[in-house]
Image (cartoon, rainbow, N blue to C red; front, side, top):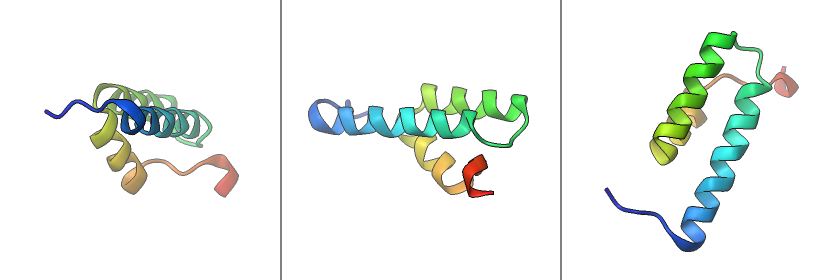
Length: 62
């Protein structure tokens, strides 16, 4: 597994924080929110990409 460092790691951190905030603000059930957050935290890049494609939509978008 390739280690992300420098600006790439910082960008991934910012994207993951944005994803987690969006997950928490979504209309999904608490259980689904917890699963999404765990996925993003444990697999930062892959979890973010999966969330981006299939994750719960934000409450603001509704």
